Amino acid sequence: MRTLIKNIKELLQIRDASVKQVSGTDMKELPTIKNAYLLIENDLIADFGSMTNLQDYEVDTILDAANKIVLPAWCDSHTHIVYAGNRENEFVDRINGLTYEEIAANGGGILNSAKKLQETSEEELYEQSVKRLEEIMLLGTGAVEIKSGYGLTLEAELKMLRVIKRLSQNYPIEIKATFLGAHAFPKKFDTNKEAYINLIINEMLPKIAKEKLADFVDVFCETNYFSVAQTDTILNAARQHGLIPKIHVNQFTSIGGVQIGVEHNALSVDHLEIINEGDINSLKESQTMPVALPSCSYFLGIPYTPARQLMDNGLPMALASDYNPGSTPSGNMNFVVSTACIKMKMTPEEAINAATINGAYAMNIATTHGSITKGKKANLIITKDIPSYGFLPYAFGSNLIDQVVINGAIV
Ligand code: NIG
Ligand code: FE
Image (cartoon, rainbow, N blue to C red; front, side, top):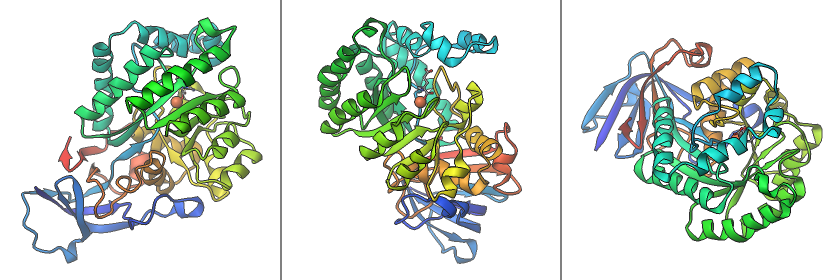
């Protein structure tokens, strides 16, 4: 099966297969071809180039993309889209003056979602989650990481991870699963936190590894959640089971989460709303991708990750949605890219790099996703008629996507 997309006004993010991520000033560059074609063979990008060099290919389908821009589908490396119910009541509480931390301390927050999820059947959880997965695919996401962490019991964590597995079996979108048992301490472990850590290490991790339910491990390393020492203990155990760390750090406080992530060779450290020079210095010595979640900052009214400071220090940056019921009830990567430009002063080139190739790196799929490269998955966004790619983040709030292609097929 061959599909030719021709007369593309501009084809974005053309990369050599050797490029796995872009850092620092290189992020300002977004390689493109104007007046281009792209050939899809089955699920892969077979060829692309300037229309003037188009050969006489035999194809099954031709799409005319005159006035349209084509770019790689978004790679959303941080979400929690498998959850039960919603938390709009907490949203109203925050409007009325409570903080995210105060709501959590009153039994709301993650524990509220965990209670709902524990009471929801696996089937019902799947049905609720499918809606969100289909929604983000139509919004241009072609690869997504999904975390557990609203179960907080062996049974409920397994339920979440099995739902994630079922989603990945039933949908063409690339899905990576992350075990986030260390998202919050359940109430009954209030006076014996060590017992919950032991439950994670001795019961949850072995079972999850045995059933091959997760690629990555995550910990919410934060004041009032998991300390640096507890994070260290959990990551040590998880790595012995072959799970790669990707951790929540520095959302509200800088307590050494970045350093422990780097020490464990984490694939990414995510949030980073609050960072200091020590955090930046340890990232400089690492292969770890810093991930910003601007929709979370927008929704909670907390600081934005200082992207300019990170990139001006030569570091890479990825952008992800953090789609979850508490801090970010949105998985719209188009909004993420816009918000990164508007609020974090990333240029359109930097933001698109961060949401494609660097997002793929943060999911360990940079050899197959995140750029227009021969042999990579044909995961594409075909825009509506727009004047330039800068119009994508500029016209925030408009849906500028005409078609989404995942694994060579139109969604
Ligand atoms: O990434 N900060 C930790 N976890 C999620 C929010 C979880 C929730 O409030 O339900 C986040 O923002
Ligand atoms: Fe998160």
